[in-house]
Image 1 (cartoon, rainbow, N blue to C red):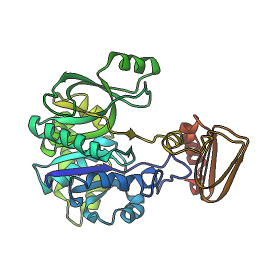
Image 2: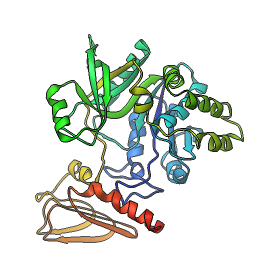
Image 3: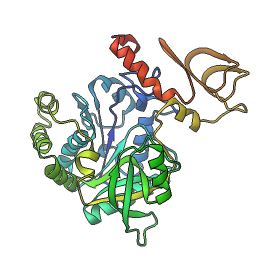
Length: 359
């Protein structure tokens, strides 16, 4: 479908999966599950229903080498490098400037680059359902993941009117977006019903999105238009550095989704995991009879429910249960399972001490 454009947001600073992820190679570039990187899997999902020349990736300059190495089938002009990370709204707006020049009537699908989605057929059907709403209702559509448990690590979307009709996939008008809740609040959402996890997947006509930016973030809109005028010129990088570096850092949720009225949700029932920690990687991998998971050379003796990932050499574990061990290059992580979300604290400490060789 030549009128569908995809934006894959592939920034990130390599904190959640340290030491395997680093500043120049954060998790979307890693083969965490399977033989391809998460980014390559994401490209593969979208190329099932749109040509690769319609796929854009926004990343940052210090990841250019690894990004270009992993995306040989994408035109280089579709790889957009932010001079500095400015959150999701400027990122999406920047890509929309490119897409609009190509096709002002196009529909854009926005996706993170680092999610694990295994049911690709249902994923495609869900996205195309959202594309239909975006076209028919001039709406901004989000894909909401059906909650499996009272998660506190995700934002939620509360639905309003059911507009499913004869469609196979449920569709709703959106009532509101809500921030990450505490456990009691999350349990209340599940008991009440009508709440979905915010997947970070959005679908809209480029023209509709830009009208929303113009209305709710006029300063950003004006700056994006200035940048767009220089696309394709030799001075583009300088213009981008100067203007984009000064724009407000704001998410699409805060900037648009919490204010606009033409917001819709399509129910996402495909298998979905945002792989937010080493614990989540342990959960999605196949385990041996003792509940252990390994990637690379490992030996488990008297150990249960443990996770080992090593890039080279052997890691042997004796008499320890419920631990995570990750060895990559010049660094090794050892922590209890359930504590792997605190890896960011290690990265923060390394930054504060200026130990860039480990970042």
